[in-house]
Amino acid sequence: MGGSRVRAAVLTVVLAVAVALVGPQAATAAAPAVSSMRDVVPAPLTVKPAGGTTFTLRPGTPIFASGDARDIGGYLAGVLRRSTGYRLPVVSGSGPGISLLLTGADPSVGDEGYRLDVTSKAVVIRAQRPAGLFAGVQTLRQLLPPAIESAIVRKGPWVIAGGQIVDRPRLAYRGAMLDVARHFHPVGTVLRYIDELALYKINHLHLHLTDDQGWRIAIDSWPRLSAYGGSTQVGGGAGGYFTKADYARIVAYAKSRYITVVPEVDMPGHVNAALASYAELNCDGKAPPLYTGIDVGFSSLCVSKEITYRFIDDVVRELVALTPGPYLHIGGDEAHATKPDDYATFMDRVQKIVAAHGKSALAWHQVVNATPLPSTVGQYWGTTRSAPDVAAAAGRGTKLLLSPANKAYLDMKYDPSTPLGLSWAGYVEVKDAYDWDPGAYLDGVSESSVFGVEAPLWTETIATLADIEYMAFPRLPAIAELGWSPASAHDWTSFRARLATQGPRWEAQGINFYRSSQVFP
Ligand code: NGO
Image (cartoon, rainbow, N blue to C red; front, side, top):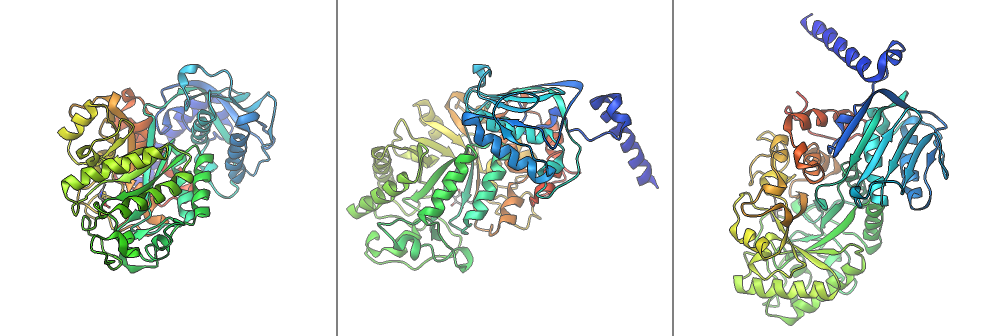
């Protein structure tokens, strides 16, 4: 009884809010649920709702998109047709409907920003570059009712609240990392994750392609790496690897979602799969067995052998040919089986190999123990705000990508009862993931040294797509917001309320998210 009274009270409030939002006319005719412009994740730079104005999607609503906007128009139509069942023709020209324009945006929105105007007649997204239009399209999805994300046709009406959003990212690099080495994750899983990253304006996918337990990318000049080195995984399962065609498909799909793939080959440690595949890569010439446990720090390439660098040059050359983006990740973490001097010698030489092939190196932050090239970006994965060596390198010009493990690691358990994940960096609830400022996180490192943020998902315990989703949602959107939204928008109470409105969207998409009591009480 008490419950029904509460429900009645909640209903009254919801109706009152609906009236306030959509105006009295719409409210008398069975008020459609209108998503608020203020609920977008990541929070846009500026939001100006136009109270009372709404735009309604109809079966014949045209999507105007030409030239470089055409593909994005097709993508938007694809998303909207699934759930509305509407025709939504993608056409050239202009008029009442949805317009995607590469003209008329203020230059201040930059390459990835956009302006979105919703009136009763039209939805217009303007950007300087296609990436900005794509970001605007992600915002538009969130302005529609959650059922818009359904894979099957649902009943409308499909109403969008009127107003204006002007938006652009805070940081250039907003990334997610997926470890396909500890457990192999097939192409379909990676493509789905790419679509999920795109929802939150993530623009880089870092693939951790090699580790002790598996080598997951075909290298023609060293075929046993994948054929043998990819033949198992943590726990002893069958493993697997990406052929070059598989990998090219991932890269192309990511590109269509304005996401750049950053491949990682971890060196000089985390290389047991390579050492097991080729005896000549070992200092003693003997190949160790394949490894299916979860220890770290026990393997090393042989720094003193020339064949090591021929091997790396071949791998880098073949990977570069598959990599349109500027970065190649060379690992460099937990090289406990490599002597410190050897580590520096090795990392310096490998950075030069990457540069010789025309790319910049990304590396875990231990690269500061070598001599980072000016183009090398260090990825901070420590658990403290004080990291003097890293801050000193930043002072000398090294740019940093921030993935503090006790904040940004998606493989940490939420709390002691989380069935998946690790806890070496602590438990990371949604609020922990959100409550830090990348621009002012590391002592002595200013925002100008911060290249971006990345949420890594290591997969020692993560075997399936459902596992990936459970760990990524809702923390991935938290890290995405830190990278995209202005520092002035940072507010847990607001974020948590906006995040809660994403839940029904994840349900509509079948995303297996963690129902954190911090967000969904
Ligand atoms: C560490 C380690 C990885 C583990 C991960 C698990 C880095 C950069 N190296 O992070 O090998 O998989 O923790 O959380």
